[in-house]
Image (cartoon, rainbow, N blue to C red; front, side, top):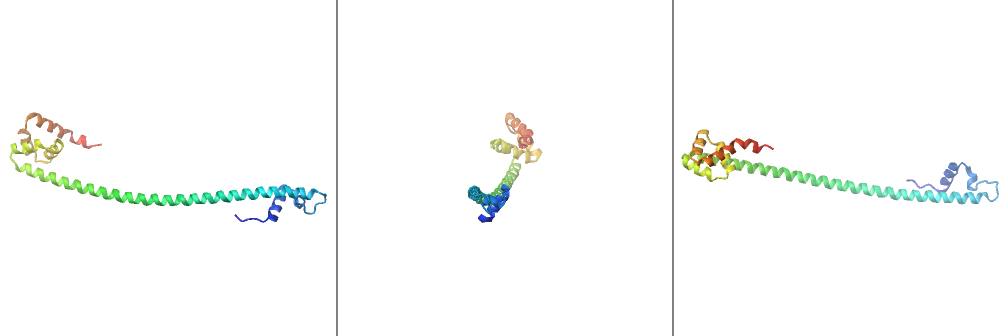
Length: 172
């Protein structure tokens, strides 16, 4: 804000009050009228200056807050970028781990398929139920059926039931 000098403020104030120059004691024909009007104008000018300083302080405060917000926003954007990079890295590691696990399950399936039915049944029965179902699901149907037939009926029935529910368990 451009600081205005006292004469400009006085002229502005006089114009606002509709008194012209006489309110400020300029060419007043009334004795004693000039100093009183001048005092009132000075009080009003003082109030206007005070308000102007308050507005300047408030404006400076708002500008400082805006700058602080811009700084915080930039920091948050930087952190978000870092988190997105970490997320991508974690997803990549999970994908690698899933691929490695799938490869191991595939190798296990090949080994179990190479066994005799009774041996395959014993191995599958010893596995965790979820892994046993996954192995049976990937096995050749004939060999998986022979392995289930070689298991105790309760175990075979439980695994067969899990195999039928498997798509439902994996869906959200």
